[in-house]
Length: 201
Image (cartoon, one colour):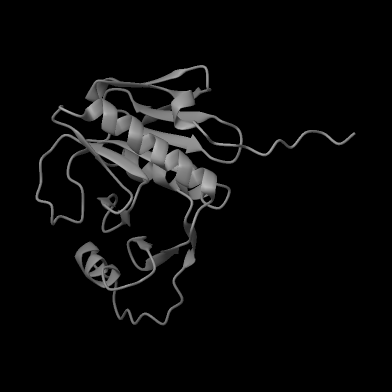
């Protein structure tokens, strides 16, 4: 996810920690986007053109493959509640549970995608691995790099244990058996141009 940057300046009066519901009510009235770290809002900043293109490719790939199935994809405006009151907004998610269109948090999330940037790398690769692993229904957490490596890291739940990681390249296919989906990794990078940083002469 590209957009994390910094904690919201403390001009937001918080006499005691908010609940997830209080945060969602507050966030709905803001022009800028935020996540909730369990105690205070965290401002989210914009991502690059590559991040946006990759996210759009993810949506297109999931939409085409999930059409006519019980499962649906959403993102990035539908939240996921992780540990305690923490609320995250992944770039894309899949759930196979039907729920009202007015809901702000997705139930029974099975697959989560985050597009990784240099600004969000630590949070997405470390903090969110722990948070998403704490959601019992989440079977796979997919990190899609946007910085030029063209790599994808798949975190898979093996039985009831924590995630194990598998790195995929553009020659590989991402398998999501829980929802009956397979996507060539190269499809996520369609029309994405990376700047080559070769060694100097």
